[in-house]
Length: 305
Image (cartoon, rainbow, N blue to C red; front, side, top):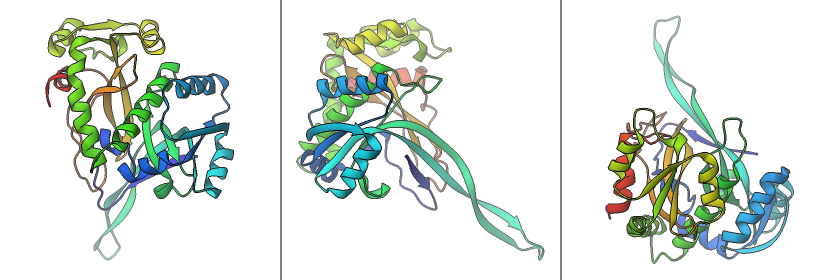
């Protein structure tokens, strides 16, 4: 199954952090009141990583067993009290207006396919139609060959659980409460060492330059060391990871700064997103790697409230 988001004549695009909660507090309340089936992919390595991460971090809703995700969605579709936690693909497709000249010489406008983008997401779904069933989701990175790193599974489960739990405690607006809560947590990064995957550092930025711009304790490490920080839930450590959210035929890259031990979100660095008629307009700060602008956003995640 693939979730498709179409950008048409007028689309209001939310920031990456808030866009990952489909229906905000109302949706999270539904999740908390539901039985949750763990939907399996059929890939034993991914499924085992999912089981471990869910057992460690997931506290929203009542887990009620596991089964292949397609079967689980059929069950959820028939029972309003059941939802499914599983991996899916999300595709963002756009349409663009194109001027065409007819034989009479008159100009007419037609819609043509525009850019598209795709990401793997972890989602909670009720199994019904797209615009009603996906209650919350989080995009996660994959390797170049499309495989899912175990550490990315742990990130997705812990971060999505934290988002849902935080929104559930909101007095009014879930989105505003989530943003405000994460902003307040940023100060905790001052007491932790932030572990950054060396592949994330942009080629135009040196490690020393990034360290100076970030302004707090940081270690740039290789993939193996970074993964162990995440999977072993190392105390007094934080780690960064990129969530590539499909939006407007492009990807909006949100850099999450995670508490390794607790799995809570301590900060998010992401660019502003504009309203568009087709493909979205992104700031120069939108980057899958840590460039100078993104390094400044890392610093702001710690200091700006």
